[in-house]
Image (cartoon, rainbow, N blue to C red; front, side, top):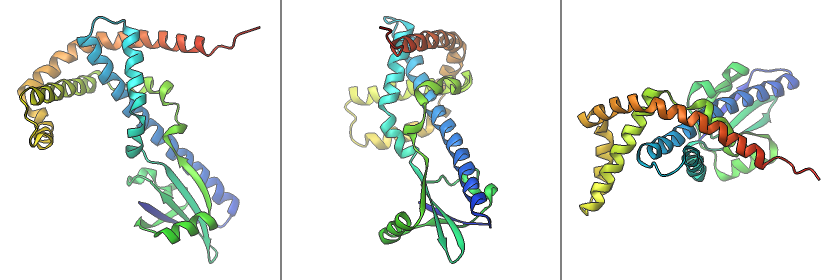
Amino acid sequence: MWKIFISKHSDSEELLTAIKDWADSVFAKMDVKLKQYFAESVVINFDNMMLFNHKKKVIEHLQESVAQSLISMNLYKTLFPEIKSYLLKQEDKYYLIVQGLPDEDKYYPTDYGFKLIDKDAKPDITQFKKFERLSFSHLVYDIELSDVEKGWINYTPPIEKRSFLQAQHIMMSLFEKEQVENLCMDNSLTEKLKYEKDIHSHPQFKNLHKKLEKVLPKIETSMEFAWREFIIQKNKSHKPVMS
């Protein structure tokens, strides 16, 4: 999906500064969104391990949870696609053509001297090649540029949402296990989607959510201590050896 904006700037230096400031703001917003998503993935895994697997140390659970979330990063690229912009000049007018920009207005460069003229442009391959050859391109966002492995800890969800996510995870896991045990593979995806859609209105979900709200604060504290140990170990492993 492409979006096309026309510049209101008359000065070229002012124009380039505006694009940089807008790109920085988009990167910051997308980076926070990614870290929140990543943090949810980590705490779901970590909380579940702490609840049902007492054989390992807390830091081992954290290391494994972070590792599992990092493995899933390739899947995140569909949720957080690369964002690129192309600055194109035509007949003394400057157009900012943006690929991969979310639909929310908060990501638009309208506060930076641009006006939206097409929010759903569909250039063909020839037009795209022209953009690449004739325009000034800029990589606005890519998940590989994020320090998500270190920064996610500041974006963990509050206990209420954390309990909500864990209750949902537990019930979905039990549902899937029951489907396999009963060999209910026909229409399994349809049944799963229906169950997932209605799960929050289930009495069992509400009871589980309340119980988890009482248990998870202690687990949350354990994770904070394990994170400090995790960072210390990581820093030691990257410390240069003095000859």
